[in-house]
Length: 111
Image (tube, rainbow, N blue to C red; front, top):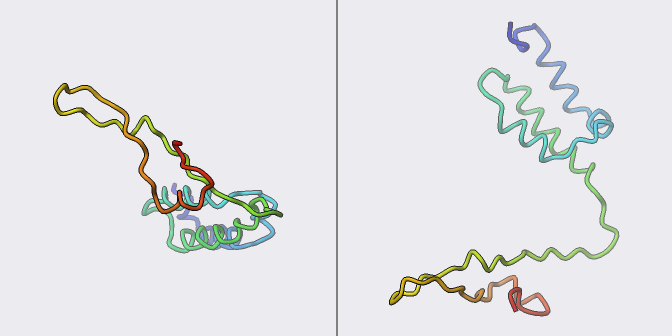
C-alpha cells in the first residue's frame, strides 16, 4: 500500500512541512528540501509538493548569519582552459580572460 493512499495523511504531512517550528527544530537546510522536491514523482500529492516549497522558504532561516561583509569569489580552474595548437596538435594552457566579476577583485584570478 502506498503511504499517500491513507486518507488525510497527505494533509498531515503538508501541515508539518508548513510549520516553522518543526522546520527550525529539524535543522533542515533549503537544498535538502529542494532535492526532496525535485525527486518527487507522480505518487506524491501536489499538496505535499507545494508544502515542500513553503518549507524551503522557512528553512532559509536555518542558515548561518553573517555579521560582517561577505565577499564571494569564484575560483578559476586554469586546467579547464586547454587549447589545442593547430600545427602540432599539442595542448597549451590558455590564460583566464577578464570577466565582469574580476574587475571587482584586487588582482586577476589566475594572475
